[in-house]
Image 1 (cartoon, rainbow, N blue to C red):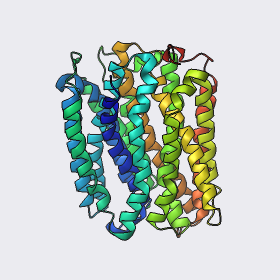
Image 2: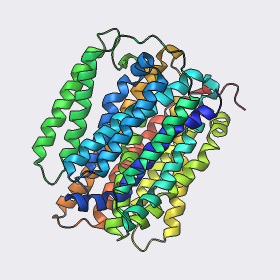
Image 3: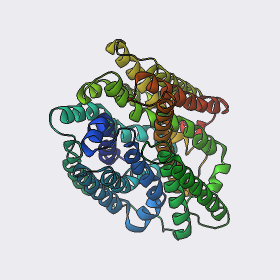
Image 4: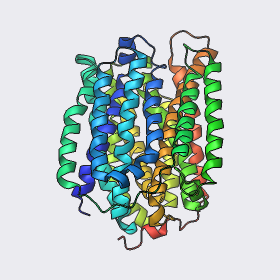
Length: 459
C-alpha cells in the first residue's frame, strides 16, 4: 500500500480531531450562548463518544457488506450533517442530539480507515502505516484550538462547525479518487440482539455516569440509568459467550497482549479523556483567558505529538513495546498532575514546554498501542479486535469526561457551591492523573519481548 492511501484516509481523522479540540476550546462560549453551564456541556461531549461506542461495532460488518470506500464516504456526509446541526443548535438538548449525529458518522470513519490499513499492511510494517495515518490527523489539534478560539473570540462559535463542510467535501472527493474498491470479506451474519444489548448498555451507562453530577438533575436519575446500563452489559456478556458470531467477540480477551492492551488502555483513556474537557475550562474560568488565548496554549501538545510520529517506528523497533509504553503512560500521567499545579502566575512558556514534552509521549503511546493491540491476533480476527479496541476506547474516553466532570462538580459542591474556582480544577486533575497512572503499572507487568512479532524486519 502506498503512503498516499493512509494520508487520504487521514482526512477523516483530521476533521474529527480538529472538531473535538475546537469544541473543548469553545465550551464556555457555547454554554453561555445556549443558556446552560459549562459542566452540563459534558453531555454533548459524552453523546458524541457514546454514538461512537454504539455504531463502531457494526463498522467492520458495514465495510464488508457495502465496501469500505462507500461506507467511508457516507460516514463523512453524516458527520458534515451533524456539524451543520451543531452550528444551528440553540439549546443543550439540540446540541446533544447534533453531536450524537456527528458521532454516528465518526463511528464509521476512523475504524473503517484503520481496518483498511490493518488488512492491507504486513504486520512488521503496521507501526509505520499507523504513523502515516495519524500524522495528518494531528494537524487538526494543532490548528483547531487557536483557529477555533480565534473564531469564537472575534466572530462566533457557530463557525467552528461550519468549517467541517469544505474539509469533508474534499475528503469525499479524494477518497473516491484514491481509495480502491478492495476485495472484501464475506460479511458474517449481523448480531442484532447483541447490537441492541451492547448499544443500550453503552448509552445508558455513559449517560447515567454523566448525569450523576449534573447540577440540573437529581443524582438518583443518573444512578438508576447507569445501573440499567450495567445490567444490560451483563446480559450482553452472557449472550456474547453463548453465540457463534457475537457483535463483539469477548473470547478474544483470552489473548494476553490483546487483553493487556484493552485493560491498561482503559485507565489511560479515562485520564486522557478528561483533560480536553478540564484544561481549556480551567484556562478560561480559572485564569481568565479568552477562547483564543486558551487555544494558543492548548495546541502545544499537538506539536509534540506530531514530532513523535516521525520517531515512534524507530523507538519501538529499537526498544520493543514494553518500556516505551511504560514511559509514555508514566510521563502522560505526570503531565496531568502538572496541570493541577498551574496558577495564573505560572509562566506560559513553561506550560507550553510541558505540553509539548507530554504531547510527544502521548503520541508515542497512541502510535504503539494502535499496532500493539494486534500483536497476538490472527488476520481472521483483526476486524473483531479492531472493533473491540475502538469501542471500548471511545467508551472510556466518554467515561473520562464523566470522571473529570464528576470530580470537578463534587469538589465544587463540597466547597459549598458558587463559582468554579482554581482549586476545584486542581483536585479534578489529581483524580484523573491517579487513574491514568494505573496503566503504567499494568504495562510494566508485560514480558520484555511482548509484541516482538510486530518489529520483525524493521530497521
